[in-house]
Length: 340
Image 1 (cartoon, rainbow, N blue to C red):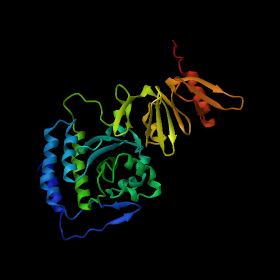
Image 2: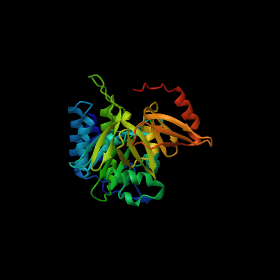
Image 3: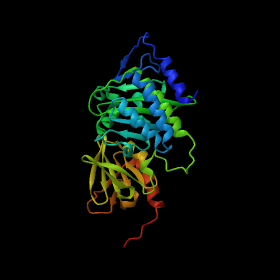
Image 4: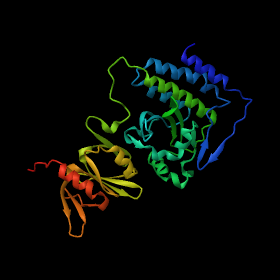
């Protein structure tokens, strides 16, 4: 029996309507147990067949995204995604994504993000439980960073199911709804997890063609850079254009060498994980600088340090006492750039 046929039989086996479902709500989380009892017909044979066929027909580089398009539509979602979690479970990155018409993509925004951002639902994921955040506004205070990220992405609701390999959490498959509060059912979430297993298996299968650049870290492409928000658009900037990133509460302001500034909902801790460490440094609890743009380090007799940057539109950046040794070492080791 083929893999798709086995999965279809398993879905039918666990779809007895005679069993009851229990739901629990905890701090904004709707816990969905890994197994389910009733599954709409469309989530059994028809959707399973179409997802399996797309994974077989398309090349490994594009098949997961094609399958996510089918899943997103079937689950009445505006965005469907699969994220990878690193071996130490310290960071995650969006590997594949599908978005409905008019819904902005998040793939360029989320390369190598600390898992601390999703600490609230991560506890349930590690236990093997799918999680539904039916209304992100109900998230508790200790999940404020996650709430802000969901707002930035335009989400009203989101949900995810964990995927394991050899007992280790390696990925999440999930859904976003940008239009409304949306409580996906336990049956839907378990079906989503099983479809995620198919997608993950397809993404891991050997490729005949030369391996393409990994899709999990768009910010570390050959040109090097990231996307920032400018109104309703995403604008790409190269790493060497970024002069400073300053904290603004729980968010940040990115200032380019020409003086242009962008407001981002990312915290400095997220930027620290994203930025190439050889090109950027944390010099203060509220400031990151691009070493390329440092013109002078000014030290006063009172022990106050200030970094002056190239460009008339770039204000000086203070150096915190805790960061002074690292700044001194980097300035001393950094080759002096020739000036015209």
